[in-house]
Length: 166
Image 1: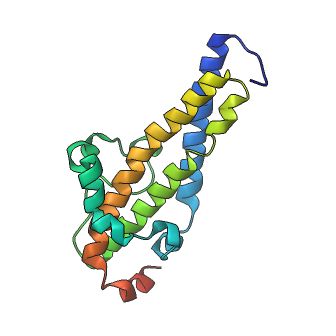
Image 2: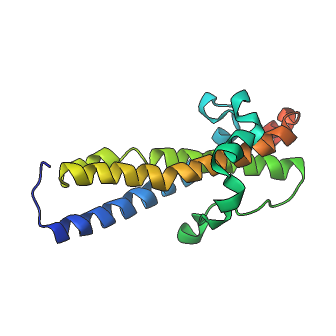
């Protein structure tokens, strides 16, 4: 801990800091161009080992709990709700898949500020903040990869159409 504060102030700062980081990162990611999420960036690819999302279902039983996760659009009143498909046409599926990339990116970035909490928290609490960041964001990342894997299995032959969406 670099800064020494009373416990009640540490708790208040932790809550405010996480709120700030979550909202700021979400707002920044919402401003990123949609076309960027249509591209086939390496980190967003559905890899063969994921078996079109089946890996995530087998490891984490995603279908049993994914409906319990709140969609960030209820807080920001912007963005694309991923609670369900907005249609079944190829364009609808590609938009949904792109928005799962945006959500995954948002939640990956939301883990990064966790080490900053060591500045004003005791070491044990800093580790709790890192654990919080992982426990809060990792399930959402898993759901996005699960959903995108399922969609990519359906849309794998529709790559030419994505250029018309930009």
